[in-house]
Structure formats: structure tokens, C-alpha cells
Length: 239
Length: 353
Image (cartoon, rainbow over all chains, first blue to last red; front, side):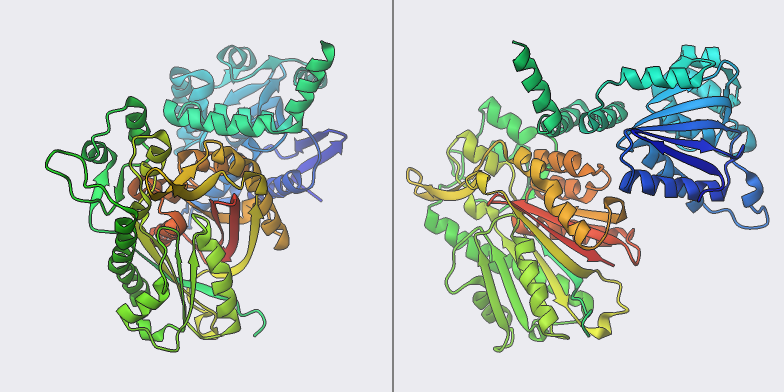
């Protein structure tokens, strides 16, 4: 069904394992198809993105042809879809995480790696840009660190990534770390969860007046869901 | 022949000549109550076109009776509607004598004979032009009108149907210093939108959206949330907006959108353009977070609100006009039109370029 990745679904858990060391057009198309499935069909509550990636495979770019920007726009749309899935997303990084792989990892809700993992945005060194990581990265780790990583293409180890806030946990046993992470999310009320994520993602670019309106609209949606009523009922029963 | 869908061939809009900033209005009406001032000064509306009575030497505007307001509605409609009609029809080289069906929508004044009859005489439509007047349905009415207009167009292939949303909201204003009227007075603006609808094989190659279908949703439990009723004390009709409207609308917005998408086997991600009624900042926020739209999706909704206020039934056509002018639409793109108003109701339509 897929050549460049594997999709496994068991119970509440869907796992995408990247099978190519470099991202090519085929892998992007297959990731789009996976997104269709995750959005339209899958009942999974947690999506795990697993593997490593050394960035874009340039084989699909022909230096004799005029460059066009539309492929990059497609890539950003894909990353954006991953960022907004109605599932908790967890990245499990088991090796180098470079370029496009870094960009995908960055939009996951939780990011876990093995001690030997390394992180790099090497695009600027190659004369182009690391996608909308230029927009997202500073929010996670601050402008100074983001400049160093984006502009120098520095390779960052697991320890430092953890210290910067790029990585949430380091564990040689990724499965154990994943199990702990899933447990830590508790009941996972999808609506409250995705609204909270959206408001947080919007938090740096919104005026306070607009943010209040956004929050009230989102909060009303959250408290109109059965999940919140269930919480209230459970609390009342205790008394 | 069976799949010959009506198209929105072109949209034209017009507004009264005088444009006011929120600050100018506060000065003109000598509003100093800080609560009302802050209502006017929130940043999401910057200016509106209005017909306002002349100022008195001692300050404040001349008072207007219900009779004055009704006359203002008629006079304003006759001044602005012809411009919108001209701006719409000139895009396809048509004149009013080419129109076979005229539908006028308004909630800002009662007229018998209706606006269609008055405009037909005033502009010189053909005497065999069919008519419909839709009065009093409120902000959602543009889509309640577009539904039968597109049905008429489909039943009469090749014939031209013209729909006008004529809202002279300043003819529905009551100034009494209360919060109730200040909410209305700070929000609505005057304007007319005209849209030409036709189902014709010769338009198959034109770059214009086909109207594919509609879905409606009425929230009867919120029947009184938006209403235009008689104020005995003022001797005028007065509009009332419940403060919970944004939430009532928000909580239900997914329902008609979901049904409309399901009818056509589509997903939300297939919709490239959202043309949402500029009801007010909070209503648009509620739609954003309940339907899952971004600020980019509602950019024209926001900018129409900012530049014109809430234009009632015509607002979404002002947004559609801006979307078309923007040049971003591509052939094959889907769009959803969405309006909300008294009932309380949410109306939706699916279109495709």
C-alpha cells in the first residue's frame, strides 16, 4: 500500500514509520495519503511518527529546469495538516533528524529521541530555507537559539535538544517512553485538546483583544462537549 | 441538460456616499457613556456608510420618526441599488431590460408596492419581468433568496435572474442611549449587493461559480435571540441582539456545513474558499473555532466588517466580490457561502468555479 513508509494501526494508536532516509516526492505523496486516511477514516487517538530522516532527496529536482515554488507550498500544506490532526501526535526519533524530517518532528505535540539522535536544519547551508520551521522554531526555543540552528546549520545532540526544549524526553527505549507519554495525556478529550493546541499555536501572533475573543469562542465549544459535562457529573457524584 | 447548474455570473456592490468612522459617530451623537464608547471603539469596525440626519445647531442629530426612517429606506434604496445593478450588469454587458426575474431582499423598511416594483419603474425594467420581494428575514436572507433564485434560473435556462440585497440599516436605527440600541448602532452599515444568476450552456466556459446546493439549519430554541420589534416608547421598530448569539450560532455551525459537505461527498479540506457573513467579531470568532476556519479563510469577512460594518443580507456578497477581485480563485475550486441571522438560522450554499 505504501512504499516509503509503513502505517500500523492497533486500537487507539496509529504509527507511521518512515522507511526512507531521505524525503522524496513519492514519500510526500504517501504522507498526504496517510493524512487523508487519518483525517477521514482512522479512529486512532494517538499518532506516532517514527524513524529518522536526513532531509530532502534532491534526485527529484532537475537543475536544468526552472525552479518553482508550488512543491514547497504543497509540503507546507502537508506539515500544516500534521500539525492540526485531531490526534495527539508524538515523534519518536531514532537517528539523525535533518531538514524536512526536523520540520515534521517539530509540529508533533510531543518529541522523544534516543540518546544518539541528532538534529540539524542544513537548508540555509545548501542555499535554500527550512520551510516554515523559520516560523515555528523560535517559539519553541527562543529567537537566539533558533538563529544559530537555522542560520549556521549546527548539528545539535540529544542532550542539548532536550535542554533547549526541542525534545521533551531522551530514552534509549522509545516504546517505554511512548507508553509513559500516552499515559500522561490521560483521557484525551479530542475537542479540548485540539482547541488548546490551536490557541497555543496562535499565541505568539495574536493581539490580546483578538486572543480573548478567540479563547471565548473556543472555550464555549469546549464546554458544550459531553466530555466537560461528564467531568462535572463525576465531580458532583464525589460530593 | 439535467446537470445545467445556475451560475453566479457577477456581483456588484454600492454604498451611500457618506462614510463615517466610529469616532465620528460618537461625536455626532454626543455619546460619552464609557460603556457605549468602548463598544464603538473596538477595532474590528473602522468605518461604515450611513444615511444620517443633519446635525442640530445645539449638537446631536435631528430626531427621526418612524415615518422619516421609512422614507429614508425608500430614498436610500433608490439611490444606492441602481449603482449596484449597474456595477453588476456592466461586467457582462447587460442592461436592466435583459433581466427576466428580479428578486429584492431587505429587512430595513416595509414598502407596498415592494422594492421590485419601485425599482422596475425607476430603472425601466421590461414589463414582463417576474418579481419576488423577500422582506424581514434578516442577515441570513441573501442565501434564503439565492436558493429560489437559483431554482428559478434552473427552471428557466438562458434567462437572467437578478437578486438584490438592499439594506439601508441606518433606516432601522434608534438612538436612545441604551446598550441595546448602541449594539445595533455600532454594528450595522448601509449597502446594496447585486448578483446575476443564470443557467445557460453558453456560460459553461465562463470563469464563474456554479451553485451546487444549499443546506439550512434553524435553531428554534433561539427564536427570540435576534428580533426586530416595536418599541412603544420610541414609537419605532427596534432591533434586538441577544449577547449569546455568537455562541448559539457557533455551537450549531458545523451541522449545516457537515450536511452540505456530506451531500456532495466532500471534506472540509476540499473547500478552498469560505464566504462567511460579516455578522460581527464574536460571531465570526465562533464560526472560526467551531467550523475550524483560519483567519486567512475569513479574511474577506473581516475586511468587509472593518470597512462597512454588518451590511445584513448583502454582507456575504461583498466578501464574494472581494474574493473574486483578489484573483486567487482557480477553476475547480469549491466555496461555501454561509450566512446567519434571526430564527435563529444558519444558511449555507456550496459553489464551484
